[in-house]
Length: 204
Image (cartoon, rainbow, N blue to C red; front, side, top):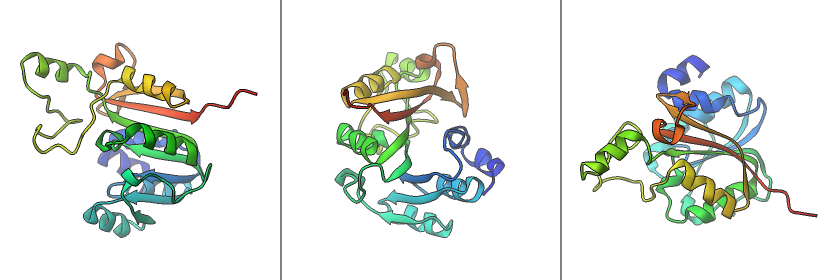
């Protein structure tokens, strides 16, 4: 898979891929159909694994030639030692977890850096829907309230607070709308929040 193919398939992944250094050892937590890892392997010479629970997504990843481990992410990342990966990805999956704080700490433990993305609940169409007394449905939150896999709702500011509590440093923060970065009023105008993170060094 080349960059143009990835950009057509998932513009958000194409943006995020720029943050992954060529040749990195990568863990993709909740890798879905394996599109991101397939691109990183073929175009950026990266190595690594995907973690995924759903049978159909594991099959799709295998068909793409991605090394995927079928694993319930809620059980943590004890499969891997500290700093086992250059980059850990958790893209549009964190909001589906019950134990978000524990997973974020584990992500920071096994990776030198991490990239996390999630739907921004403060996006203005979501606010309008709530003002009308309805749960929001959008491209980044495409499910109805009764069938959504998302169990957590967060804004950009909420996640920054959580990162601080978990001892995780924010290296970069971007809000995306249709795969493009939003600079003015990002917490209002960005539908997807993307963070590049690393564990804070312990004080001497």
